[in-house]
Image 1 (cartoon, rainbow, N blue to C red):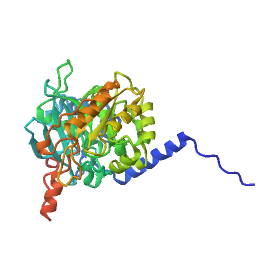
Image 2: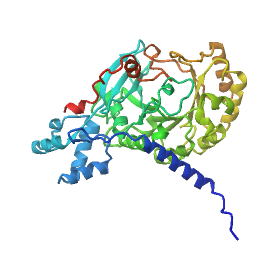
Image 3: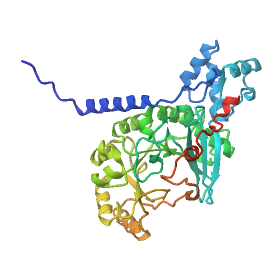
Image 4: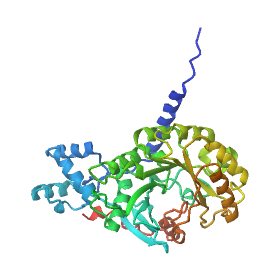
Length: 409
């Protein structure tokens, strides 16, 4: 008699779903970090990989420690300027390796001092990165992209109208922050408590970071390494639209701050404006938030909520949001919708936004209304989309822009 196999446990189902997410990510893998002349980019390598590269050319592994310091603490891209390395060794390194950066294709500065970079990579692909300075203090956040385009197609998001082309590699993710540091002259990494202009990272740019988890995790480990850039995990926030199977892994392995792009409190509405909800509905998403390691009153989970007129901004929506958050250390960022060309939505009225905020605040949850930054250069939340895509559409056959500075090294 044939026995019916036992149903899979929730843990087995979760592991299987994680495997599917990672397999899909592999289909959009970035190109190899090697130049046409065969030189390898050292940015984006782990400590172990960097040591292996040194051993492969007949050097001692300690060279990796030296290089790590020059690349990630000092921000040096020219081997000839690495003064603790002998000149013959500098020449050997230059023959085989580069210390790359994404090429700056364009820069725009908003009237509010927000700065948007269009970065180009070796294969001609491009992404946008935004620096948002604090209005009161000499510090600010770098909003980093993780994919060329996006796979999610959220209806209110301009980035979602650009189809996913590929994932970014660890070097391309780290490189955005390093290139922004170049632009602000913020090398070497401060070690004496000196305030940093580029003080935090928000992984909230183009793409869904948890659909490119391996590369994002590798990049963040490099950035958090105490002997390099040395940015604390408490100063890094990863935003997800709710890739539930990867949220647990992110919390366990990285422990960075979590932001959740919620935007609706009912599955029927969220199914429409955040299509990922059809796969991981609100109930599963909130359960994953409650499991997130380290969540506490000191490290609240941020819920992002774009205010769309007549869609998700009623008082009933606010009360349901309070119910969903009950018992969870959380804050809510209310984001006035940032219009973009062709968008089908309107921004909620000021009265509606403030009524919503008051209901959430009276329930004991912080609910600041985010002031739009960089709207005039399409750098605000939900507005990122590579301008080059529109230019190329307007000028068929146009040559790709300069891509990576290291190509000319």
